[in-house]
Length: 189
Length: 165
Image (cartoon, rainbow over all chains, first blue to last red; front, side, top):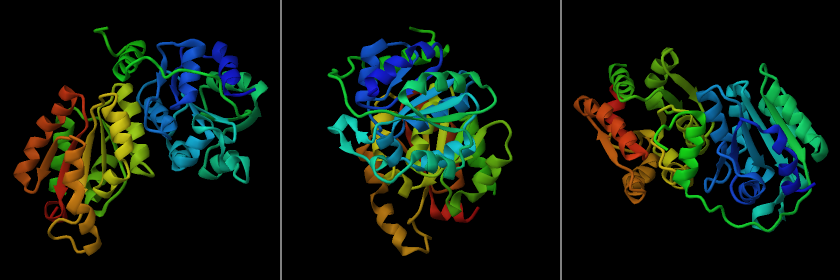
């Protein structure tokens, strides 16, 4: 499975969780598969999907899933230490690790060489780190979200490759407000 | 400690209820105040840029966030400020210990100090310069202003003010 197929395969497991999705092709592919109000698409700030999800999980009780990539985690690796020490149990970090910078032309990342994000996450102090293949990811994600007593980092090893997608035709304020409306914070829409 | 307490009091009066910091010697007293305050969330973070992301998430979750850092932290965070906080119009208070201003013993801090306000001006971020105790009274109104204009705002606390605390 590549990213598009993986994102498709987890759709049935995402019901009312708040999703923060990484910038570029991950968000554009997610939008193409199934646009929902509980999906927050990042249009900038590369590397921060994990951190935005962390702040959201700390601030309210609904379950939160950050969908991130290996390239993004590599550029904000300190996030794993902050997550290890501060993430509440309503938080799940799903890293789609395809060993490549998909949005920029599939240049290889260091996870295609020596770097193991599983080892990095464990070293940072994360306790419940799961590395799995693409086929098992939907089930692991479901189990992680169902467990109210722990937070999880899931590293899904997928194949590189993208599908043809367009930039997301939503403006940032629309994304922001419909997401906050879904949480129940914006009444004027 | 009096200055630090007053700053936190005024931030709280302005509605700020979520605090992050990348530590600075000049922020040490404020961090101590926050660590002992059960009414608000406080955590240290590893880097200012991820702090901007955490603040964005906190705003989405209905908190009013503040990140405390040295002015060098602005340099570490420009893309996150512009393409996250400003793009999505998210109010966040940037509380900055203004290293390199008069009284600063470390000469190397002056380079970032020379361009701090210019950077903030380029980013069109409203600034409040605090150099005396009286200036601190403006903090609560200034913080509320961030929510009204849906934008980050910056509070600069200069060296002399903070080192006398």
